[in-house]
Image (cartoon, rainbow, N blue to C red; front, side):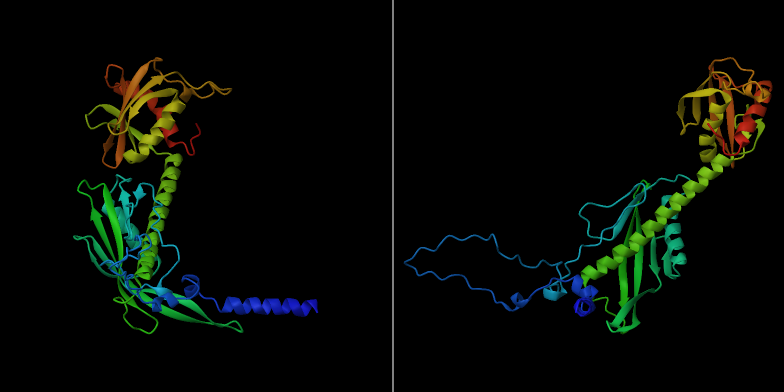
Length: 366
């Protein structure tokens, strides 16, 4: 008897679940008979009587010019609105904005901000097999090809097979660049919509559903942007940890210097690791001007100190300064004394073996 009762409960639960779909879960439940109600005329008071006091506390406001009159009753969605999610470092949204828009700040000085954003957009489209209908680089506008969305439709709780319906959309992505060029706003808007019956319904689509699709699309791009930044950062860290080769040469001013086979942005953090290993303490630094003030304290003291001659530098324990400069695709590093006099070629030659070995050491441990 208990088995039969349990089976009846399970069957009932399946029936209830089968009768529920996504549309029902996103619309208000209960009666919508209020739609049939007429406006009650104001109370008529005889001329010889005093009208009771009234207020408009519960008055229903009239629709505005931008409101959708069809969003009433069952057509009104009660689901939480989709939000643009600014995952990327330096990204943000405008408070109170109803648009599917995200703002990016410049965080990579190696290339223009608009190039970084459009490269991310194109990478996302290619990864998801979405074509490009048109791309106007001068006006910073891109229109996608058809974005196909397949939704599974259950045939019924007793039928375990499923059918699919497809709908197609086209999006326009527009980029607004701030005059200073270090902030850009990426905006997503749906411009075409074809339902499962191959009917073009872009003019009659539910505005809430339209905005949901626009926000979802731009969130996918933001996620791709964030992934690209994290991947680039991890690859850059791995490259810096592997080390760089170096040689003796000259800086752009013709002074004796070390030439590191690395971009300036990669050589700068690596140099700080190398200096610490060589026995220098960085007192102050300014990456924008490529200037470091250091103090030489001698080689690190450890149980194996003195085993390797490279630990000893023919330098007085004193203050020094380093000038880091970009030289093509390489970076020059110039050692100077506190009076800003560059090391002689002999001094550079004497400390080069130690410098080059630490600069090239793989997985340098500080």
